[in-house]
View 1: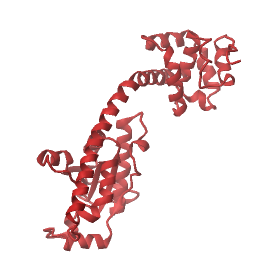
View 2 (view 1 turned 90 degrees about the vertical axis):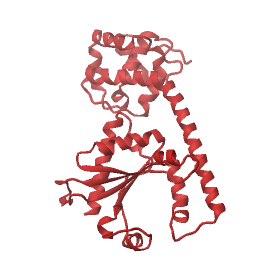
View 3 (view 1 turned 180 degrees about the horizontal axis):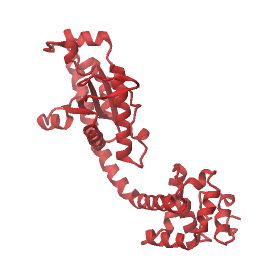
View 4 (view 1 turned 120 degrees about the vertical axis):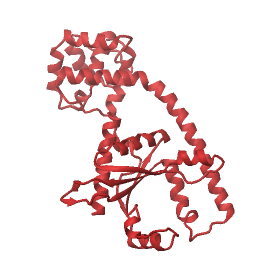
Amino acid sequence: MYEAWGAFVSETLTALMARQIHPANVDLFFRIPLRPRIKSEPSLLAKAFHRGKPYMDPYAEIEDKVGLRVVVLFSEEIREVERAIRSSEHWTSAKARDFEDERAARPFEFDYQSLHYIVRAKSGVNYSGIEIEPNTPCEIQVRTILQHAYSELTHDTIYKPSIQAESDVKRAAAKSMALIEATDDYFAQVREKLERALAPGRLIAETVDREYRAFTDLEPEPSPLNTLLVDYFRQWAKEGFDDDLAEFLRAKPFLAERIQARATELLYRQPAVLLVYWGIKQAARQVPLSSPLTDEELAPFYSDLGKRLPNTRA
């Protein structure tokens, strides 16, 4: 049952995050695969009887018999995962540990950091024909990739009561955690600057995605090619691009048929093909100069617009 419960929590959390961060790829958001981990019998016995825990009913009270480890890139993303955890209707959630609260309580210490939640099944949860008993727990640990690296290095050698690390080892671990915190702050600054730099291109990508769906009645399949096209052709998307593109497409409804007819090709399943048409309309001679598309790929776009591909690469 615990294996089924872990798999259910994993799949549900993945779906919640996919909706929350759309159109970003959830498989890229999670920095390691999201797989449930079942605590082995020796680990359960060690936790129940050898770690000084005041359990009255150890098996019932141990909350991490099954667990998930969620690893993200930025500390801000930890809160995004927390919102998803708290939003599910299939479980109750209780925060067991919060690294930011611990920082605030002990600002001069640099120690193991992670966000821990215990989620417990509500009644009526069934996974692959297995009925999950109400109140079955699953521990979800959420941390950055830097925090994860620190935990993997130190947890079994410093934080287990059975092992007494030397003071210089503990000092070195504390210094590494201090460096991790500083690095996370630098990451946040870099991310903020990148977000500002990428914002105009992202708005253009959202515009062509929306127009592509409405104009062609096709479901786009964005790939890195779409990003490549947006990065190049966005130079011709000036202020008022949203309205200008919509007006351009209304005047040339036949372009939808051309795109639909070629939709077996990956290129024409990219929303940014609309931006290719727009760029040619605005600057037919300049487009081929440094275009990521070959002359052979560009030729049909020119032909659709009644233009001849200029010989600018000779």
